[in-house]
Amino acid sequence: MPEDNTLTTFGGRVRFFRDRAGMSRAVLGELCGRSEAWAKAIETGKIGMPGLSMLIRMAEILHVNDLAELTGEQRLTMATYTKRTHEQAPAITEALSAYPLVVSDREPVSADVLAANVSQAWMVWHGSPNQRTAVATILPRLLVDARTSVRLLEGSDRRRALVSLAQVYHLAQLYLAFQPYPELILLASDRAMQAAQDADDPKAMAAATWYLNHVWRDAGEQAEARIDLAHQAGRLLRPDDDHDDRSLWGLLQLAMALSYAKTGRRGDAEHHWDEARRAAHSLDGHHPWLMFGPGMVDAYAVTMAADLTNGHEATRQGDRIDLTTIPSKTRRAFHTVEIARGFYLKKEPVATIHLLNKAHDISPDTISYNMFTRSTVSELMATGGATVRDEARDLAHKIRLIPAA
Image (tube, rainbow, N blue to C red; front, side, top):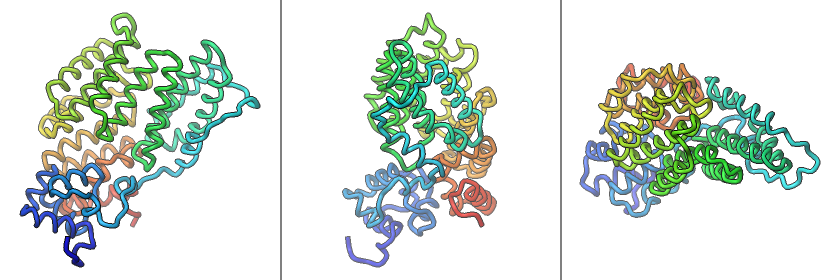
């Protein structure tokens, strides 16, 4: 790589390797699943360094063997591609990282009270438009209470406390999602599975499998392992005999469908989505804290189509669903963002920014930490038309992507 002042920036290095490969900006943008305008904005510095998964894709496309040649001296951290950290995160990370070895001076919370407190926390998470702020005030104490009770209770009470502890870890995982704590997110999901196994509770293990699948799928890792885990957990359930088991069995089918879609296996994805949908439509409503039900399954059809890069199918599925049937603000906002992702794939920026604003109205917290939202708003500020640029900039202020004017 020659010494050149133009190569001191990330955009300059992208242009150098693109020129070396004899590739136009239009081709680079298309191969990255983006636009020519996006490639130009990258090279001119209007858009900063993208996320790690996109960096790896660009390196493969441009035949760069050493990622450092593309990134230069800029360090790769989670903050590179998601800079939002919740103000109360230190208290949660401290509670999650602690190892309370001595608990003899404490009194356990009863299994009944602990379960009720955890149920209330889930209601807060799903019911608040700013769920991280709402749950952050109670999550550290829940972690302490659940871990203490597991240490001090015995017999069936201890097993019930372990089930509650697994759910508290799920909440911690959701709270930390898309913040710069990847190792703690994995730790929370792994501890949840361990608590579920220690409780010897198939339902708890199935829920933990769902959340482990999220971690691995978002990281693009362990595709076969996460699918096999869902199969194993499903075999522990009795969907024909138990209402809750049927909910969890359907949730695992949905987990497999999403994993297959993420790896491009459309037929397998659609088969397991059909199984999940049949299970969901045999139920009366949604699961109280996992939110599995007809609305959720139908909404995830949009995600599957978007992961398969079929924007037309994603928006078609989006047109046929009623998100108001899902009793969770965070889930309604997330699925609205996914519909926006479909319009983005169709290169319809006006519809994209409109839906992102709609998602913000539902739950500012959900959209503020969403990685697609943050990267797309950044892009549209640079490459959208006049109206789109202004709306993107306004939304960027709202989600604290850029400082308030």
